[in-house]
Amino acid sequence: MKAKHLTTLACCLLMGLMVMACGKQVKQVDNEALEEEFAHAPAWVLNGYEEGAISGVASAKIGKGGIQFARTEALARARDELARQVSVKVKSLVNNFVQQAGLGDDQMADAFSKQVTRQVTNETLSGSKQRDMWISPSSDIYVLVVMEAAAVKESVKQEMISSFQQESARWQEYQAKNGDEELDREIEKTFGGDK
Image (tube, rainbow, N blue to C red; front, side):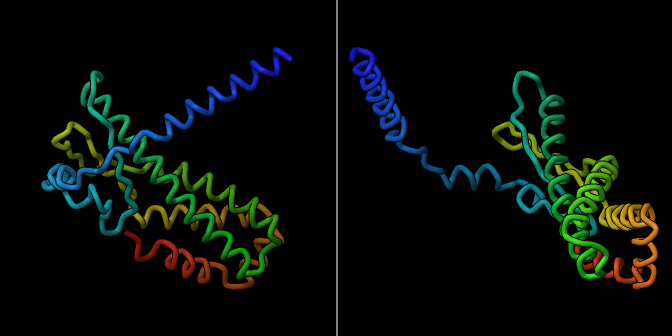
């Protein structure tokens, strides 16, 4: 009986703490301060765009580790963003192409998609470069990291062809369906007018 009362008391205390924590007001965003913060920021800080490239923007606070530590952290975050972008686009491209070309069932397309996505992401990230850097008035460092879209397109094509060649039946079917031309169209649709 005593244990039951202690459990009830503990639950009540926990719920009370949760209500108090949830009851605190959320800090309001100061729009004027934000406008001041980014008034002189380069366009890429907010847009992350560069013609003919796939870009990622990330930031890190400059702290006790100094500017180089913050830059390294921001670069890693920007490359993570690039990896996510490339991964999503490649998965979509591979799935669409394999299904449209009739080169396998859903399970095979999924395995093929994972293999190609992993290879392309690893290969293209190694070619990514920091293109620009900006330090905000509040000591946040922003970096713009880019990969040339043409290099990503070529990597996707080569990896997909290489994967098709590993299975002779799939490779013959790919060739019979004018796979190169269709693959080029799909790649251009996916990465063509990319920001």
